[in-house]
Amino acid sequence: MSVNENDAARGPLSGLRIVEIDAIGPVPLLGVLLADFSADIVRIVRPNSAWSDEELGAAILHRSRRNVKIDLKTKEGQVEALDLIAKADGLIEGSRPGVMERLNLGPDECLARNPMLVYGRMTGWGQTGPRALQAGHDINYLALSGALGMIGLRERPVPPLNLITDYGGGSMFLAFGMMAALFEARASGKGQVVDAAMVDGTVFLLSLYHFYAQSGQWSGQREDNLLDGGAPYYRCYLCADGGFIAVGALEPQFYSLFMTGIGLDPSAFSQQDRANWPAMQEAIAAKILTRTRDEWAALFQHSDACVTPVLSLEEARQDPHHVARGTYFQADDYWQASPAPRLDRTPAHPRSRSTTTVSDVLAEWG
Image 1 (cartoon, rainbow, N blue to C red):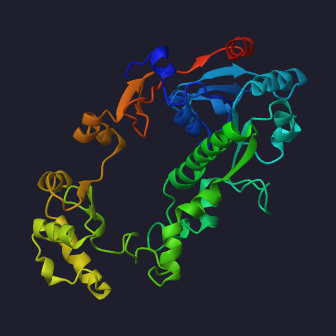
Image 2: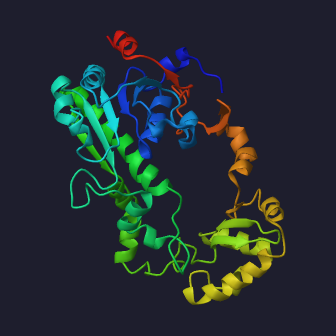
């Protein structure tokens, strides 16, 4: 994907200026999301910051924006940062509560210089509460939200990478919070602080399951429910070659196509009768073991049975559907995810990262 600066200037967020304080986890992913859609983001990188290392995904997670090096522990650096913030529409940071205040860059100082600033704060536990100052990672926030206890094997929970809490409950909720506050600031002329706690976002993502649990539709046991691998028609199955297929035949018509496709009579089991689930799973598993993953994938390729192969990352990049949609692109020696979602008139435009100076940014921002 080849993109020039003129393309980026026509993006939906062009003209939006954001200062990003270098961080790990959900903050850089949020930066990619906004910058790909043409927000002008300047990352403040602290000298010798381990968070800028290549092994943390800088070539991908820091794309589409410029870096400036500022030592925020010095008075001179804090003045430079405030000069940038004074010209920005928003700021995003991911430090523990109190860290930015100790650097004289907390909301009070920044909003005093720029009353319309939207100050986005990303933490695991939030700015308040008994755990606010406690260390934690995605797995901890996921555990305390109740989500981790619902995911995994019957014998133990299994953390689903850091996709749910860091990125789902974190990056995406702060993105929405920033957009909502920036939209409101245009009408009111006033900025505000956005307190995005990953645990809060994750609890919100569980909304459907709060209902299920309180209405008797969800047991306390993993692999015992409709969407956690308990239902034999919504789980993964081992194939003859050691690969897996994913089955999501929830609706009766899809269930019928699936069962017929693997050579079983759909009427042999009552789909919604949980008492049938163990026998149904055993029968399905035995059938799936008779063919390889790719053989099953080919059989169901054009079917509505909701059966797909479980792919590796490399295999996913080569899948015809992703190739046709341009879901991936290659830049800076890495395959990367194309921006999402897709806008038909003012699409996103990923760009390479670059380095600049505070004086150059201030001259440009006026």
